[in-house]
Amino acid sequence: MEGSSTKLKNYRYRILALLMFATTINYFDRSIIGVMAPTLEKLFNWTNSDYANIMISFKFAYAMGMLAMGGLIDRLGTKKGYTLSIAVWSVFGMLHALVRPGFSVIGFAAARFGLGFGESGNFPAAIKTTAEWFPKKDRAFATGLFNAATSIGAIAAPIIVGWIVHENGKNWQIPFLITGALSTIWITLWLRIYKKPEIHPKVSKKELDYIQSDSELVESEEKLPWKSVLDKRQTWAFALAKVTDAVWWFYLFWGAKFLAETFDVNIKNIALPFFVIYILADAGSILGGYLSGVFIRKGWRINRARKVTLLICAIIILPVSFVAITDNKWLAIFLIGLAAAGHQAWSANIFTLVSDVFPKKATASVVGIGGMVGAVAGILADKALGSVLDTADNTGYFWVFLIAGSCYLIILGLVHLLMPNMTPLDENLKPIK
Image 1 (cartoon, one colour):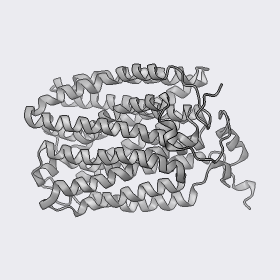
Image 2 (cartoon, one colour):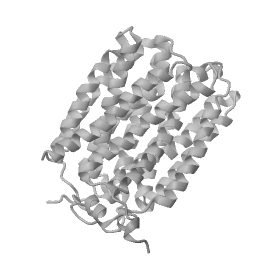
Image 3 (tube, rainbow, N blue to C red):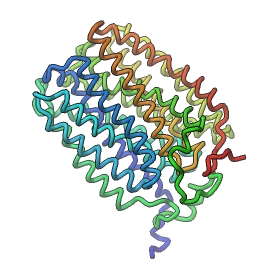
Image 4 (tube, rainbow, N blue to C red):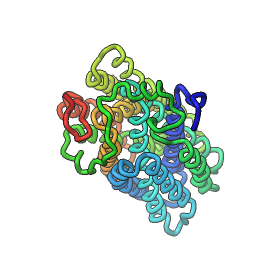
C-alpha cells in the first residue's frame, strides 16, 4: 500500500500532459498530407478533385468513427478506449508510406480512411478524461491546453517535412513513419499511469475533493445506451456548433494549397507561415479556455460565461472573410491565424459544453455525435471546393473565406435557440433541479 508521501497535489496535470501529447501526435499525423499537398499533387499528378476525394475518405471514416468510437469509449472506459484509438491511427498513418504511384489516389484514400477512423477516438476520449479529472470551473482551461496541442502538431509537421522532404518529393514517406515511435511511447505511459482519480493511488483526498467540488452528483457505474442521448436538444446544440470543424479542416488541409497557389509558398518556406498561424491558434485555445473560467470565478452562471466567450470568438473570426481579396501575403497569414485563434478558443468552449451539461458516462457519446456532424460538414465543403477550384481556379477561395468568417455568429444564434439554458442532466439524462 502506498503511503501518503507518494500522494501528489496536482496529479491531474500529469494526465493532462498525456492528453496534450496524444493530441500533438494526432495532429502531426493528420497535418502531414496538407503540408505536402502541393508537392504530392505534382508527384502523383492529382487534380483538385483527386485531392478532395482523398480528404473526403479521411472525413467519411472520421464521421463513422466518431459514432462508433464515442459509444465504444463510454463502454470500454478511457484507458482501453484511448489505447485502441491511438493504436489504430498509428498503424494506418505509417501505411501511407507504402503507397505507390500506380494507385496513389486509391492508396492514399485507403490509408486516410483508416487514419480517420482511428483518430476519431482522440477527442471523445480526451473530453471524457477531462470530465473525470477536472471540476467544471477548470474544464474549459484544461480543454484549451490539450486542444492547443493540435497546433503543436500542425507546427511540427511543416518543420519536419521541410527538413526531411525535398521539393521534388524525395523522402516523402519518412514523416508518415515517425508517429509509430511516438505512439509507442504514449501507449506505454498511458497504460502505466492512467486510472480514474477516485481509485488512483497517487491522488490525495484533497485533490480528489477539488476534482469533485462542483459535481452535482456521484454517478453509478451503470452504462448508458448510446441511443439515449439522441433525443436531447443539448446533443444537437453541440453537434451544430461542431459544423465549424469544416472551417478548421479547411485551414489544415487546404491552407498550404491556398498559400502555394496565391503567394507561391512552397514546401521549403511553408514552416514560418504555419508557425505564425498555429502559434496564434495555440494562444487562442489557451486564452479562450481561461476566459470562460474567469467569468465563472466572477460569479457568472456557466450558461452566460460560455456563450459570451463564444460570442467574443465569433467576432474575432469575422475579419478572415477578407483574406481572398488581399494581395499581401503576411496580412493574409495574420488574418488566417487570428481566425484560427478564434476557432480554437471556440472549440475549447464548445467541447466543455458537453461536460457542463451531460453526465461523465455520456460525454464521449455526445462528443462522437458532434464530431460526426462536423466531419460530414467537412466532406460537403471538400467536395464543393474541389469542384469549384477545378472549374473556376482560385476565385473559389473568396466564397470559402466569406463563409468561414461569418458562419460562427449564425451558428451561435442557433445553438442558443436550441439550448437557451445549460441545465445539467443527471445520470438518467433528466434535468437536475
